[in-house]
Image (cartoon, rainbow, N blue to C red; front, side, top):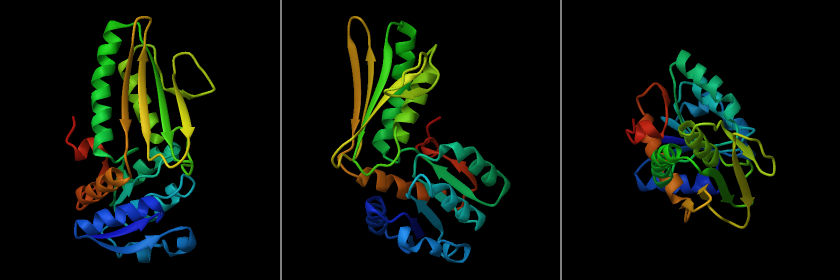
Length: 239
C-alpha cells in the first residue's frame, strides 16, 4: 500500500514507522515547509492519505485528497464544524473518508465501555458527570476530540444532558470538561461520575503515540477499495 503522510511531525513519524513495519510504502510526506506539494498530481501517487496536521489546515488538506479521488484517514481534531461538509463531498463523489477523534484501539474500547456504563448510571440516577483531559503543551485544540467524543457518548445515554462545556465556563445540562496542557503527556482522559455517597472514576492513559499510529495504519488498510464515510465502529465491527 502506498501512503501519503499529511502532517510530518511527531505523530507523522510514528505513523511512518508503523506503516513501514507492516510493509507499506511512504510515497509522499507533506508538512508546513512543503505545503504547496499537496496537489492532485502528487496525491494521486498514493493509494491512501493519512492526515494528522493542524486544525486550521486539516479541512483544506482533506478536500484536496477527496477531489483527487484518494481516500483519507483523518486524524486531526478541532475542525469538526466542517465534518458534515466533508461527508457531503464524500457522498457525491468517488471518494472515501475515515474519521476518528482517536485511533487507539484501547480508547475506542474505552468509549464502548463508557457507553454501557452511562446507561446504567442513567437508570439509577443521582450522579453527575465530568471529564478531565491532559495532553502535551504542543496540542493546539481544547478540549481534545477524544474528550468531546466521550462527552457525546455520555450525554446521548443520559437524560437531561446535551453536549459539553469547557471549564471555566459552566452551563446547566452540559458536561464540564477540564483541559490541561503540561509536559509531554501523550493523552489522559478521565471520566468521573460523582454522587452524594460515592465516586466512580474511569481513566484511559496513553503511554505513547504508538497506539494512535498503529490504529491509523489499520484504518488506512481498511479504507482501500471502499467508498463512503467510515469510523472506528466500522473498523472494529461495533454495531
